Length: 185
Image 1: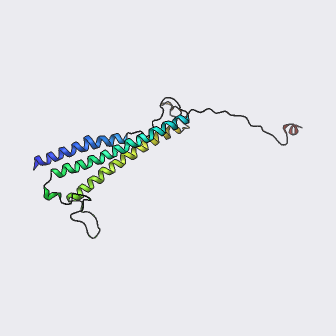
Image 2: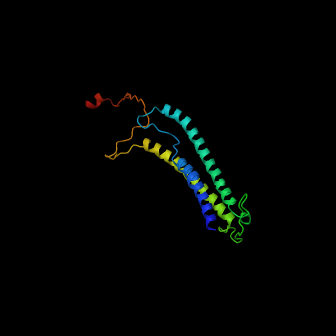
Image 3: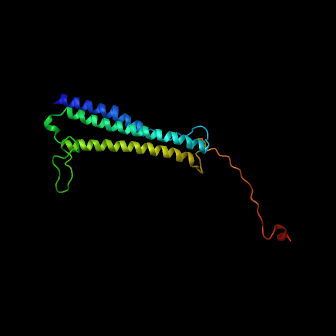
């Protein structure tokens, strides 16, 4: 029994850590919009860059998410191959529970279909968390570059501005009524 558990454990941990974990870390660290680091950019250039970079990042995230799903099903197939045929009942399709709670209409959480169902749910949740982290970190980086702090910490140099703009101020023509001469008299 012990060698069987060791083989199953080794196969599962290899798939979880080497493939799925690596992809989830790569997904979480993906930048949706690379920002210019050293100098400000004209808004039009940043918009053109975003139009190219964001769809490419979305495609990369989609591919990584599909790979995670593929590896999850490989993990399930690997685990099913190591099981006896009598243990693989209801391990196809929607993983129907073998001992459902009829009162509360919930899963038992201890039969193999429920364990597989929960494994898929946990890995799906980790994949969603990685996608949210990638989105949040990209939006936070953009917010930090757009936000101007009143009191910048003296130890850290201020980040360079994000946009380069050319602004021309013109002094408006002001007409006073009564005129300035009338008030002085």
